[in-house]
Amino acid sequence: MANVNDLKSSKFLTKHDVDPPITVTIKSYEESNVAMESQKPELKWILYFNELEKPLVLNSTNGQRIQIVTGSGEFNDWIGKKIVLYNDKTVSFASQITGGIRVQVPQDVPVQQPDEEQELGMNFFCRKCQKNYRELNNDTCPDCGGVDVIDMRADPSIQGN
Ligand SMILES: [Zn+2]
Image (cartoon, rainbow, N blue to C red; front, side, top):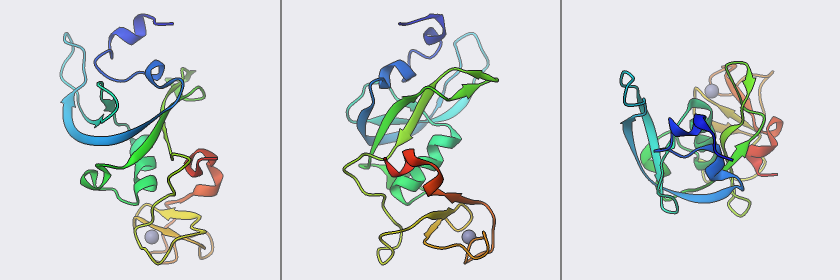
């Protein structure tokens, strides 16, 4: 069901476009004004896909998930990579549960690691080092000692379960 809330973002993908989930290949990215015509400009990064006409407005959560899927925080490295877009009905906005587009690892694509020697059993991702780790050192990153570490086992959607 469409409603008036979809009109303001109809140039971009909405949760309804990804329900049921769809596997897409990242084609390109650009910075774009995502505000309504009557509003003051709001620049955000958007991603285009081979399979879809409309682009995705990239938010921080999904950017971090794509970083985990691709093993890189560089947009250039994302081109050609496959991700799954789906409607996560638990996403909330302004204290309301609204649903929203989330990124998931495709079932048939393993999570890619930046270091080819480290393949399986990587459970943690340090946002500072931008690397995956098998074990933490007293709940901190073994390299930098930082605490800004994502436990990938805690979010089943990241591992594609
Ligand atoms: Zn670190």
